[in-house]
Image (cartoon, rainbow, N blue to C red; front, side):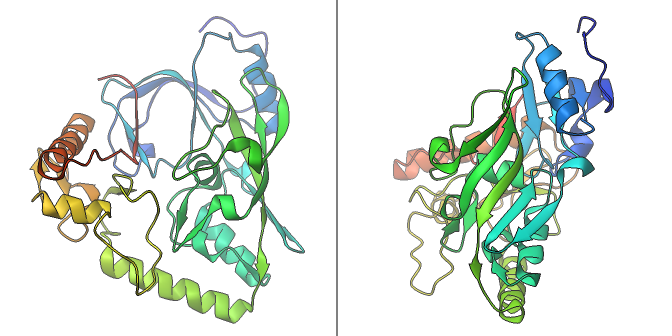
Amino acid sequence: MEQLAYTPRGPLTAHRALADLTWLRVGGPADWFFQPADEADLSAFLAALPAEVPVFPMGVGSNLIVRDGGLRAVVIRLGRGFNAIVVEGETVTAGAAALDAHVARRAAEAGRDLTFLRTIPGSIGGAVRMNAGCYGSYVADHLISVRAVLRDGAIVTIPAADLHLAYRSSTLPEGAVVISARFRAAPGDPAALEARMADQIAKRDASQPTKERSAGSTFRNPAGFSSTGRADDVHDLKAWAVIDKAGMRGARVGGAQMSEMHSNFMINTGGATAQDLEALGEEVRKKVLQTQGISLEWEIMRVGEY
């Protein structure tokens, strides 16, 4: 990268390995890795960065495969200056680096219900970008607006309606970095909210390989919505059910495996490469298409070069 007209206050590192920053522990290096000190630092950096240089905002790497060849981009990872959580009446404002689980707990302590966030791995920036949801609730049901720094450095507030939030998708502008989000949260009794979250955690730990290296759900549900958690929930168009039907529970490629515990969770059993993981996912997609005529869509984001 040529000499920038702006010297960032946060650390800017060349050829930063990314594997240790992803839950699956795979992937090559980023050309550049930037951790802005605050939003002014991020804004000035992006304004000075040549327009042709790609930018990739990265959260805690919970839903990500970085390919073995790494990323030809500036990876931007927000840290402590972006993790504040403020509850004011029915509004909860959370920095993009705040963990979803922390936001759920802080809101519950204040008697506000964002309990659906408790079991979602990752941070608020990623939750907004993916319209994260479970148990029948989604970010879209609560989001008021986001603050973001655009690729040209402009700091803007984007109303939720302008993000066109849908199942696991949004229309954030290319290269935009979410820095905070405002949510509307219904009132609730703190003890009851805490009990609900404890129940959700127990259910998750009983059905998902939370002790393994995984990246959450590998594929989107073909039904087009998340599990509701209700007794009347149907399973025929759940990703795990169609994977089972294709005989791919426990399938392996190298060090990558579809979990025996939950077949829509891909795990690194040790020594897997990004290529192993992606090849396994594509094999699962092929088998599901062959056996059931269903084309599974990746939920895990795959980025970088082979």
